[in-house]
Image 1 (cartoon, rainbow, N blue to C red):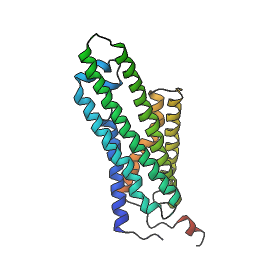
Image 2: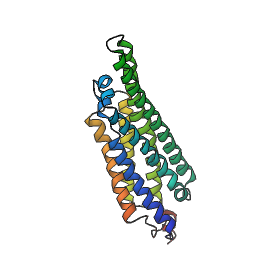
Image 3: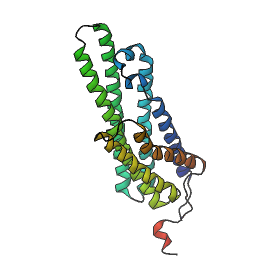
Image 4: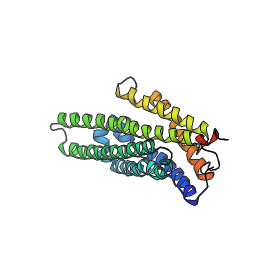
Length: 234
């Protein structure tokens, strides 16, 4: 039987808070002006929206890196390889997020320069802006999502094996992570865009993270359940 400790309870609560913080930060990191067709002109005039989006995107790093790192001491007792893998993918996701922030700020800089240049030699601004916009989409919706979905896949795999949370929730997380990975790969291969199909494929893991967060904050880990390797000895 697992023994309940204050450390486990604290880790569960902090993990739940970080999951919710990551979701909220992700929502506020959306920058409609950059995703619009007239981003070259409008980004300069709506600079605060871009900077706020960049700020919340940076906050996502805390959640993406913090969740697997915080859980490592607990999960490594059951599988150091999977636990370490989740941390590695979480760090990768954090790095990609920071790259995405830098690209976002570069787009803002180009918008400033575009406004100064006026009608003179606009073509190279447009070309550079389009390249950066495409690069930002690939970083945010392919690289970052693939890394974090892989981290969550390992995370939920360990949860399923250890029964620290109900297995139905872990199974939901495994399926949701797989769908999120598929969404990023399909977007990368241009089978889908940033459309309803992409959002629907990512919705299950996002909703599972919210449910998991509430569960961890309210109930914590199922520390009184026997380990899978203990069930057969009874």
